[in-house]
Amino acid sequence: MQFYLDTGNIDEIRELADWGVVEGVTTNPSLLAKEKDRGDYRALLAEICEVVRGPVSAEVIAEDAEGMVEQARSLVKISSHIVIKIPCVPEGLKATSILFEDGVHVNMTLIFSPLQALIAANAGASYVSPFVGRLDDIGHEGIEEVVKMREIFDVYGIDTEIIFASTRHPEHVLQAALIGADICTMPARVFRQMVAHPLTDIGLKRFLDDWGKTGFEI
Ligand code: G3P
Image (tube, rainbow, N blue to C red; front, side, top):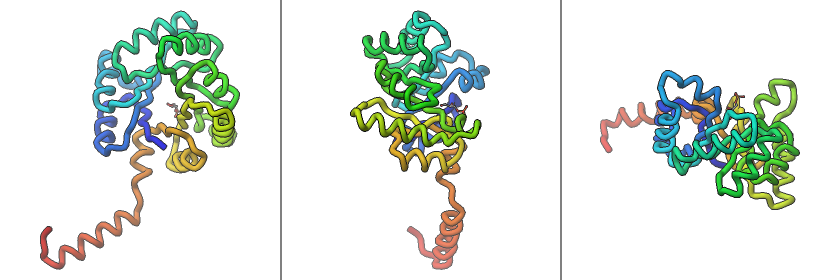
């Protein structure tokens, strides 16, 4: 399973990209709005693409298919790494099928059910983004919906990739990996939590203390 960062913050992206395990970035209008003081969002997206050199999702804000296609065609000019995020609504499906013909990669977003994922794949989406945390927030078992998506895609040999999104904690990342999500996108906070373990810190301290007593150098 690949790890993506779900943020528009270039400092976080730079920090975690240095770990060598960030294979892509997902943004959305809310995440980019948080970075508005950085200035031009296009320059920011270009910088993110330079740092990550993997798929970087940027979302359209038009509500009709024609507008979505126009915005998508403009966004893909920023970098060959740009993937277009389009919401799973009828106009979004229409736009996705047009963009599919153009060879533009679409990440269909705001997906909450397996049938939305299936129809997005049939429209030509390269990725689907089920928002698991938001389903959990309203009392559903979000992961159950992703399990069904995985099953349907496997039954039909659909190669659209599942991006487990709206990831709130490391347990979500574990769930994503166990059920075979292709990608898990998460905030930097979850990335850091995922690596941290108190026994690792205690163990490292003990190793260093013991070695320190020898006076040897490496
Ligand atoms: O990638 C989707 C994500 O940004 C949504 O996350 O935490 O706003 O539900 P959240």
